[in-house]
Length: 105
Image 1 (tube, rainbow, N blue to C red):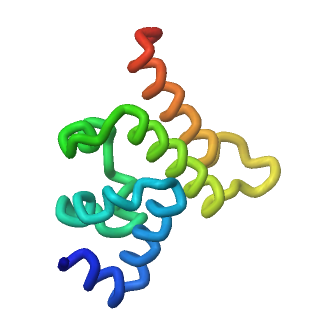
Image 2: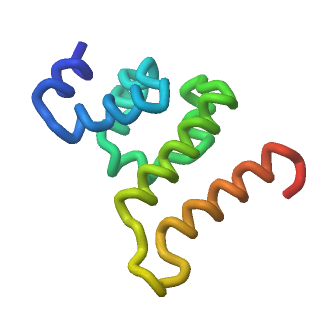
């Protein structure tokens, strides 16, 4: 498949596949790749509705967003004493998203 070829040729694409495997969602790699979400960086623009349109189940979406928040937090840990950096923003986004689905918005 084109996705598998790209994963062998481009480290950024391979990293996406490895990350998906680490959160047990590797089977979504080709579908995400086909929709243009072919690197970790491009996932930053992905919204929950995109995953719903792809047919991703609610539990997988939650795993995806929690895993992505952890990934972004690891890559962008704020310097000590810097409030409101990416890690906090990711947590707020997830909290808002979760509350929408639980009916507590």
